Image (tube, rainbow, N blue to C red):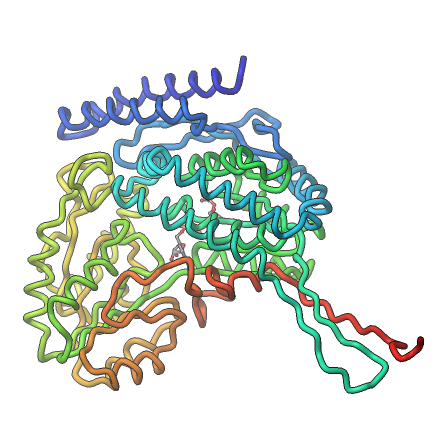
Length: 529
Ligand code: NAP
């Protein structure tokens, strides 16, 4: 049986289960029936395009788990099983590492121009399959289709950007203090990279790592989240189609700690790059010590969004909506604490909640939807417990604060006022569509509150004062600051956190450094003829 036939069978089999589950669980059978049909249509288009892959990729070969174990991939909007993927562990990971190690010896020696061409081809393929990839992201992650296609543009942008940067890995010549010597600095790829990524941006969190890694001449073993492996596999299929040699990009998934431990234990893996929770990031950092690997960590945030009295109200509302509700509040840079100065507080809460009320919640494939489901039941329960803690301590519900009538993992867009800094919702990432609004008196108070956290990823400020913009941006202990703007991520700028939000930067020219070693070469005896 061909792979294509097999994946057609898996898709057909899974969709049978799904319609049944959907009609049993959803309170709105008509729209769910419609969705199941749409989703079925999307899935068959993905199969036709060869993009619904349900096996891992090791050394250029599509592979099942060696013991045949699988895990189900669900559509979070319906609970339906989309397909199954291999549940892999240590043995498969070791083989993927060997494949990457073998491929490194040739890929690292390919000229930068050739590597650049391969990456550019990969970018072109990602963009020409933007619609299918967007559908795949919506199917397995739940975000609205429009937003999913935006992720494809954003994610592919890293491949395009680093295709160009591949040609600019410059070294240095250092003026020598001794007349008979010449001192050179070479930049060389670190080697095999283990890339572990989360579910909230199933494509972009991969391309942000793999783009620069491949541009520098590294090879990779990717471990996507078990919740969203299909986009990773589709991207890997397109990498093969782009002519990126077998073994340069490998994808394994399944038992996260077994895969993580194998990557950490292997002396052949020279770098771990991770995006995900701070707790797992700390474990990986400790585990990397055993073989002294380079580590980059993009971890959780607790972003303050500070609205000063002198802000333009419309700009502040629009910017805060974007910063808070993108991907239904499930991003590391989502505004987690909306801190509003007392003079503008009531006006802001009023205008902001009126705008939030207009959001359309629903399945990501439905027209006009801006808020999809949360990723799973555990995510909803976390949101519920944070909201309960806040309201029990005096926060007021302006909007929402309950599950949505659509059922499943849909939660109503929520605004809470009178939130205080000691509530859990202001101390930890809520990772959901809940906007807690806090009040402050002075700029000093705002800075104290904003910096009173172990996190340091993104912060936002809204003010019409140029002086205050500079002063506050400089004083915030964060890696990214948006001034009068809530959506600031781009492949051309450095992304990353300080304090316990991470190490290293992704995107931009700085993103290349994470995958390069510096070698000093001293040429002696240069005066002899
Ligand atoms: P997570 O639970 O830490 O998972 C992230 C990845 O790590 C997944 O692939 C997961 O695999 C894997 N993993 C879990 N335990 C592991 C272990 N012991 N060894 C090796 N790998 C392991 O985080 P998440 O819930 O997916 O993502 C949400 C978090 O990511 C939030 O805190 C968010 O702020 C953060 N995030 C940060 C950024 C950034 O750029 N700073 C961007 C996006 C998200 P499985 O899923 O298969 O278990």
